[in-house]
Image 1 (cartoon, rainbow, N blue to C red):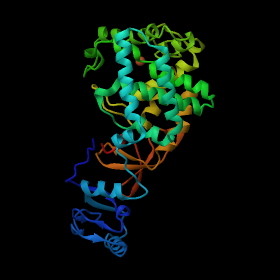
Image 2: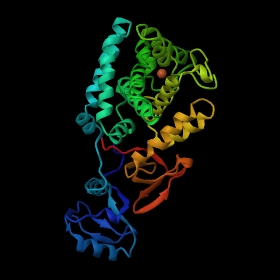
Image 3: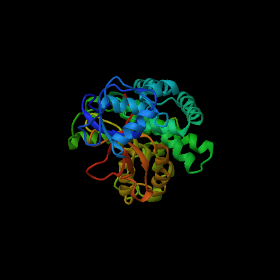
Image 4: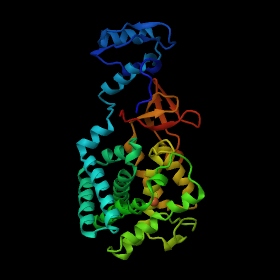
Length: 363
Ligand SMILES: [Fe+2]
């Protein structure tokens, strides 16, 4: 998924050079034209000091995309994790495969079996309990295959609901209920034709009306569940200003569980890559939710997310809009859309021209 061109020269940081590194391609100085190190050279600390002198104290050097990636992944303090490896190692793969199986079962039986879904949801709750939030957040924000959207989205909204519940200080029981609601909120989509669900284009008005039926389908399919749980899942597209669907509920008529699920659902949909749109960075999504939040989303929930999620993203690599990789160094909650990023040895404030496209997960 990396969009770095491995053969092209790009600006990188001299601080990424490390003792014991074998230089794969020639490295050039800050101006890009003076050769600093020839390919095949094994460099050590003394040589790194020499290279720094030759580069006249500049932090930026020019290397190939291949060298830049190698340097990033070897630096002990900048670990690049591959999404698929982390998914395998943490058991996420099992959950998303299981979610697909459950969704297919729901479609076949035209109902959600409460007991078996409760067991699945409890397993997911235990998974959340035993996995560091940093890892969960990495998985939530990593670019994933488009064709596995529904099962991933179901698991992700369950996990994010659980995290938000925990961050809001809820009891384990309450947070676990949120996980179940998140897991099932979009199960009604299994009754929507895939042709419409995965259309690689803007939907027509008629098609959108068909899609909008899914939250009522979720409610119908969950007939075995207690009313508050069923309502919370079915109300995840209601908005505080009454502009949502299916019942155009507003304010306190929408339960806290439904409001939390609305935020988790929108967050995951916005960071995800879909057949009709690219991924967005967590920072951009948080900024948009707090903007949209003034009219539709519960601001306490959005603020909880802004207070807790970005700190787990510090020092993580991101894909920038110019195709290079940056490292998130700092952010301000009041300007969450544009954090500071280290790029090619310089710390820059991101902006509408040079911004984070997505998290970099090297898959
Ligand atoms: Fe939905």
